[in-house]
Amino acid sequence: MAGLSSLLPQDRNSRRLLIAFAVTTVFMVAEAIGGWLSGSLALLADAGHMLTDSAALFIALMAVHFSQRKPNSRQTFGYLRLTTLAAFVNAAALLLIVVLIVWEAARRFFSPHEVMGVPMLIIAIAGLFANIFCFWILHRGEEEKNINVRAAALHVLGDLLGSVGAIIAALVILTTGWTPIDPILSVLVSILVLRSAWRLLKESFHELLEGAPQEIDIAKLRKDLCANIYEVRDVHHVHLWQVGEQRLMTLHVQVIPPLDNDELLQRIQHHLLHHYHIGHATIQMEYQRCAAPDCAINQAPPAPSHNH
Image 1 (cartoon, helix red, strand yellow):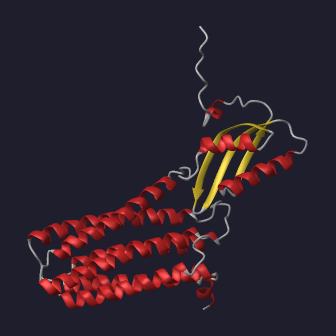
Image 2 (image 1 turned 120 degrees about the vertical axis):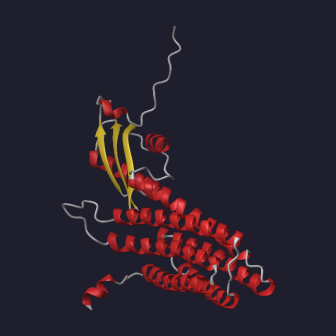
Image 3 (image 1 turned 90 degrees about the vertical axis):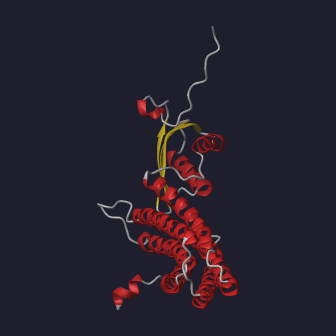
């Protein structure tokens, strides 16, 4: 039991994530089984959308859990990259699910399939309440401070539309008997899944390639350091990437020889942390212009000469 208790999250945001993950996963399985038994493709599509929520919540929990593991001599950044790899695999699997749902929807539209409206309606309403509960749980967390909780809450909020779509489809089938509404709404829900999955695939692939965070403009950051720290004359050879939620940077900084080298280094690090949330920066300070060939990286090309 001691080993199990060590895996349980200790902070409130993590507990909220765990509760939301458990509820979402249970109702995802319920919708998948209900969709199969009732013949409703809309329920199956909504189950696929809930799978995106479960994946997002699971990745958030993994980020919390693995971020607590200390780095070692073999994994010097710890195990945070596993969350990115999990996100990439999840996104690729979800794209495959979307293709299968759209294919089946097209087939059912031309060859209508019998759908049991009452079980479909009951399960869709239960799924809607599950999503409302999860959103309430997550919204009570410090989502404005925790990117994991905020992202998970947005996923669940989007899934509310999928549950509403399944309810509408069930009501239409019960009142009119028009079954094509089921594959039509399943395609609309699949578009929501496609949007989330594609964004997750792009972000995780970008991070696996050690790309710079999208919201940081390297050229602007270089100019900002030069403008706000008097001793800084040039910033070059900049490399910025992200592991999990941790931003890391290496850079060369050409400076006026300071009276206190450590104090200047602390000011640069403080600026990067408080303006760009870069908590781990390796800074090489130089008093002369860097002559190494690879130091031209990130440098703007020289202005063209107008002399004749």
